[in-house]
Image 1 (cartoon, rainbow, N blue to C red):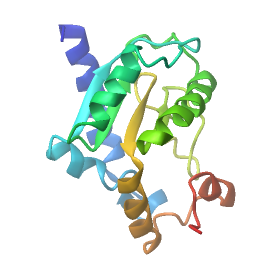
Image 2: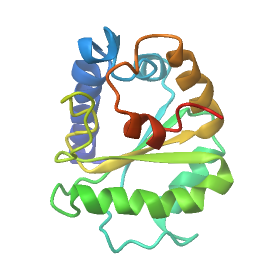
Image 3: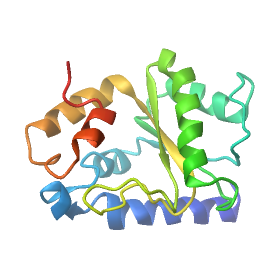
Image 4: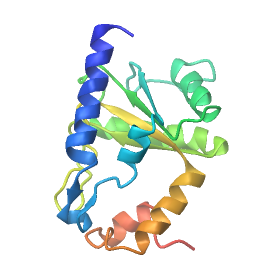
Length: 173
């Protein structure tokens, strides 16, 4: 890893510790992601610096798919893929790319969420996916469901719209 990769990861970690992990009133004073700090402190986050654009193909031999398979066969809970080129892809293109990627990785029991400095996704005006660089997180679906189920017993989702909850798979059937 070169110096610039280290700086990019450090910038992302600052965003996590100074934003994602902090309690916020929009989430009833729970952190934006109540599980990020635990995963970070346990060194359960795999960071990857990968250049990609809207034209990327997720072929089996692509660097990103190799990284995803490496993650799927690891002990890590979360993989964060960070594009070092902030202008390589727009926020809507990143979302479209994740739709394609999720189709491919669902068979591995994984789910990807997009992030982008200009992402419009917000909960009650709080833009939760505006990571300093374009990218995405990959998580194990079987671990996400119990975590989000536990949050249903709190006021965490009180400011989410019905459409946001539906898109996130809540309520569970």
